Amino acid sequence: MREFLFVIFLFSNAAGFSQTKTYTHADSIKGKITKEREWWNVLHYEIHTTFNSNDSSVAGKNNITYKTLQSSQIMQIDLMAPMQLDSAIQNRKRCGWKQDGNAYYINLPEAQSANTINNIELFFHGKPHVAKIPPWDGGIIWKKDLNKFPWISIACQGMAGSVWFPCKDHMYDEPDSSSFFITAPKDLVSVSNGKLRSVTEAKDTKTYNWAVVNPINNYNIIPYIGKYVNFTDTFMGEGGKLDLSYWVLDYNLEIAKEQFKQVKTMLRCFEIWFGKYPFYEDGYKLVQSPHLGMEHQSAVAYGNGFVNGYMGRDLSGTGWGLKWDFIIVHESGHEWFGNNISVKDVADNWVHEGFTAYSENLYTEYLFGKQAGAEYVIGTREDVTNDRPVIGDYEVNRDGSGDMYYKASNMLHTIRHIVDNDSTWKSFLRDINKTFWHRTTTSKEIELYMINYLKLDLQKVFDQYLRTTKIPVLEYKLTKNELSYRWTDCVEGFNMPVKISNGKSEITLKPTTTLQKTKISENKIAFDNNYFIKQLELK
Ligand SMILES: [Zn+2]
Image (cartoon, rainbow, N blue to C red; front, side):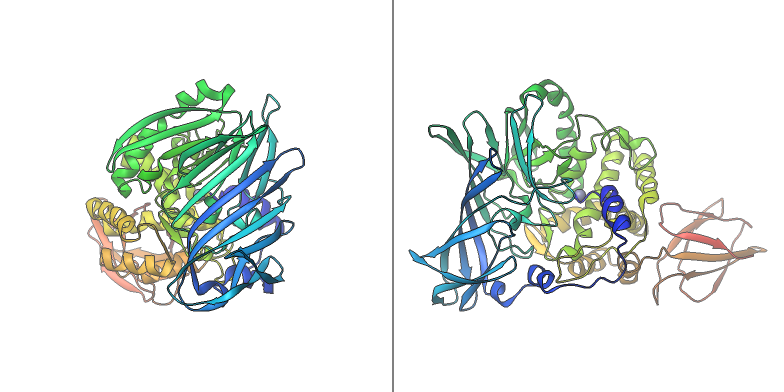
């Protein structure tokens, strides 16, 4: 998610973000793979939590199973104030710790040798930071539905999972699986990622156990608690039978049954373009949320009011965006880019958001044809601000500009037209999902993969669109059937090929920053608008 419009309005402009930002010690602790993190690899979280809406508190424990990669005795665990870590237990022994802001450096009872599997139980309680404008700022949401029943959830992308539970809170290391026991008042239903394993009842409460058997980001592990009802369906896809399960508030059942019909069309389209849905074992769920939406893995948050568009609006301004439900399409697109392929550092978040924003135009194309898809993605250029680069700052938990959505998606659209072969382009999108299947990666790795797979010299293209705030300008002059041209406003060595037409046929130019000349048979040219560039005619 990180929905760009609101991020831009509420944070970037209002706060006047500049190109350079100074970072604190706390930013480094949060964003770095510290030595207290790198020696161990998370295998599994078993989280038990009681949610109490009467006093807005949560309490529970996280039992972490991990594998040691090197020997060490100090383990970094993250938990944001005002949440408190009560105790850390290993082999029935209480561990001491040193606290540094939101990081706890836990002193394990014995030095751990490499290549062993251990676990540690972390007990916690408190009143988690409450989200002010979810899903954009992050935190817990204590809401009431229209019938005044409690409706509770969490949105914590950016802020991250440690806003409410103790964990190893860095994107590079995901648990290979996770199990979540949610305890809440008896009259409410609790939903979370993956499949429901059990429901147990006590005097006043019910505990729902949900579990995923695939790697998952911390910010994707989310409870939804409310007066939910459920309806189900199945989808026969590339991985066989996929369970579809929908959870909505009781009074929205009928409208949801109608709106959620789009899910199967969306899944069909994305399996064609991106390959098999990445989490067949965990099923696909859409869960009504007390905020607009988020890509919570196998339990996608839906709060778009059961209307098409982005809360009824079209982000592309072309009309195509009103023909489908933005949250169903965008947030589910993240199952491939974001949840299947995840970045190690949020600075590279364009890999999540750029490809997913690009999926919106592929969906438009799937429904209405190639021209419609192109119009959609080209329309979203209006939303590009070039305020700062798409790639953020590394090791400080700082992502890049909101342009990671539509500038990056337009870069991908441009590259598709450089490739100029839809079957190669489709194979690339499918194979990248296979190559990086359930993995964390970096922008650099993705760029190299694209350069090698597509056999194109794209490095300067990536540098231009992802690492500067400039849109390249093609300067040209046409006199007596002779066209002079060159790139300006670009990185050194920028060499992106570009297509033009002389009214009769297409010509591929290979401009550089040095002026070149070529003969044109007709004394006129037209540019291909699929390339995200500017043109400047020299008089
Ligand atoms: Zn998104």
